[in-house]
Image 1: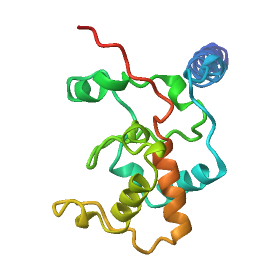
Image 2: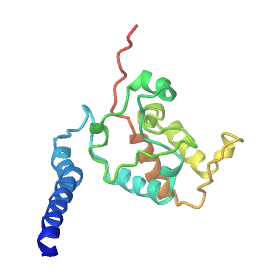
Image 3: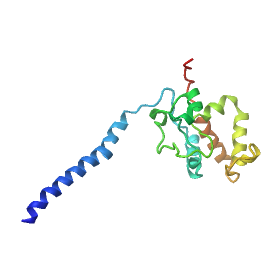
Image 4: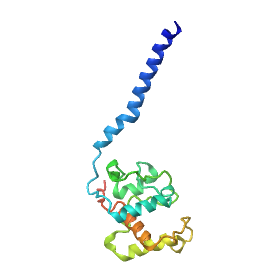
Length: 173
């Protein structure tokens, strides 16, 4: 007799759990496929992918973000290249948005250290990776002087790719 009373409750809870799971886990998998790359975004080169791996392996994501948010603290970042959109991360698996900013946001570093500047930009970045305190005595960034020249080059390629494809936003004034 107790079995008859408990059975509908178990069935009801199972259905409720199934619906909740579908809404939270299954539905986003289908809707995320509608994301398209942002205009101008290109896939990473093999060197940039290696640099991205080094960025992840060395823990850079723990101190640097790669997202410009729609919050007051990001107004200066957003004024030039706008707020980050989902299409900006189309080729990022996994995404490396970051949750803390001990160092600067890197989402538009490719605009600051542009490839068309040539060697001065590369030399600065590689030197900065090797010993950040040579460039900023107060830097808390660790030195990566143990990375090989190829790893430093790949990491530089990755950093120079971040936001390099973006166009400045129109000013509202």
